[in-house]
Amino acid sequence: MMNLDTLSSISSLPLQESQYLLALAAAAALGALLGLERTIAGKHAGMRTYALVSLGSCLFVILGTLSSVELSFFSGINPLQLAGSIIIGIGFIGSGLVAFKNEHAELTTASGIWVAAGMGMACGFGFYLLAFFSTILALAIFSLLLRFENFIRRQYDGQQEKN
Image 1 (tube, rainbow, N blue to C red):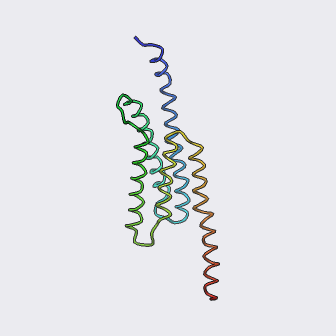
Image 2: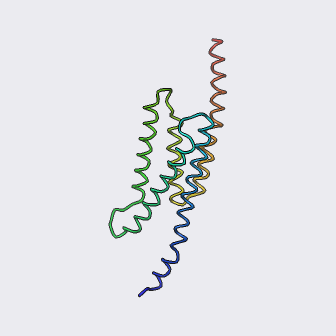
């Protein structure tokens, strides 16, 4: 026989699932937005890469959160451990991008992929405002700081030629 707690948990399941679907969609969209800037900048890792990294990170956080609830009778289950593993795994992707690139190292792109993973993790934990603000900051770093760096380089190169 069902009690009131069982009924309330069943009726809230679609709402919970819709929140996870929103988290996945937000993570993919924000990752794609960062990837769009990288595509415009002519980098190899573009919209699809960033969207998939952010989406995957979000999915792993959701799975970690759900499994910690489902397996709560086991001690030591912690979704933050899975989140930490995401950070390490994305580090391998970034280092592979840098190590196997024949041209100059794509450190900015590798760092951007790492940030996209963080944005996906934020969406997975339900921190949409944090993920959105991180996306805005990352876009500013990609574009505005590039312009500033280029300005500084031109100024420095001009000074060095005079000396």
